[in-house]
Length: 283
Length: 297
Image 1 (cartoon, each protein chain N blue to C red):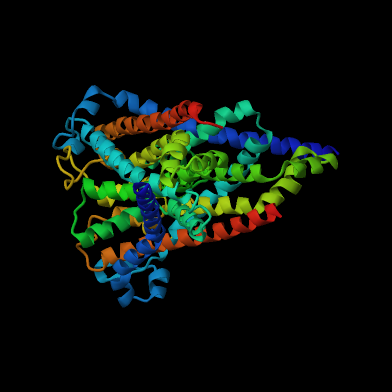
Image 2 (image 1 turned 90 degrees about the vertical axis):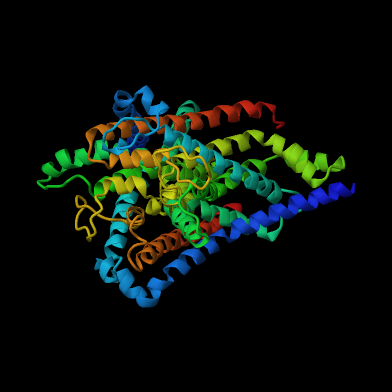
């Protein structure tokens, strides 16, 4: 009897310790980023682009990388949103939802979400090489769009497939067409989920380094056209950390702080907007 | 009325077309990478590529063994950390934690999942590497630069925690409540009910989360690359540096077009990664399918 009680206590203790360990690592990461990043932070980091010799310790900031990251991730999200909304609504449309290929499609999406981003990067690079496109904003945006597309489809599908059947049936019985039911009722009903999906995908896209390494290149300037190479924040952090100069490495932590702040705000925003918009859904 | 039907056609047609393209993407990726690695595969046998450890691109020798072993070391040790801790944390969160606690902890875990990999890498450089170099290695009487298999594994483990915990929590919640109650009514403690009934019933699903976590871990690039040392040899201990496949791809994209067959070799490395991940996802899918069936019956 005593042994059983001990076992119970020991395992509960271990479980609690495991949860605490995971939470501590999150807190530790945030703490390190803040402690290292705040002292190195300055206004010029976010208002100036990198000057020549920035990586040797010269002046300037990472505005080029901030603008680059936002335009790249923003463009990628727009492309992926357009495609994923149509697909997610389509596979849940009444005349499609029970077809045999929907299950295969869902599985393919599942597999794609697990494919490492370096593989997307390598694949994007291969395609760009055969099309003769150099590392550019265009190449990076499309690669990141392909990277986040499965994530968005999956998140939206999860919400859209949970829309009450009765709602759809009522709409159809009033004589609505499938596209009307899908876009005017189902989409509105799952709007909060769609917004959450967009924000989560944006966070993933802006934080990913491996996929843009080959495809977006790097540049000290803000690109003026789609065919120019573009700097991104994760790569800025990566390159700055790799330099021998201690001063530049300090700036890497400031860049990391900027990146983490953007990603965390997006993540928190996803949660808040999700719950706010869902007040208007019919349950 | 007619325009309505047309719009339906356009909506369903374009939806299915996009779905088809997404569905074929895996095959297109395999095909594209395979086409790029063909020049290498034509002149080198698969056996020498995977089992030789001489890596001299300038001499045309491409032995991937050090990289493959490095990948397995880092990922394997990371999984040895993730599986027990992630499993225990998931059991706590789904079986014991009060709603109040869950409402704080689950979003925190989602936040952890959202932290960019380069930030994990930076924290690894600041915390984990010096810890191994200055504390752990001297305590064991060894000398290590800190950039090592263990550093990579620790960083990787923290990154994969959310996937393991979320996946396992989801699975545990599908186990019917009656089963727990039946076990408790027979006089088990709560832990015994979990150990003997819930975990056993959820075993295929837990295996699935482990497999998916492994698939995610094996392809992680930037964070691992920053702390693992990147020395192309077969590591003989946890405190030695290693050079995993994703790091190989990421580090050499610059010069790969200037050396013959080098680009082919890197694309082959990407193909190997893709192949492993797809195989793992297939296994996870099959196991999961079986579990859903057994829960339904």
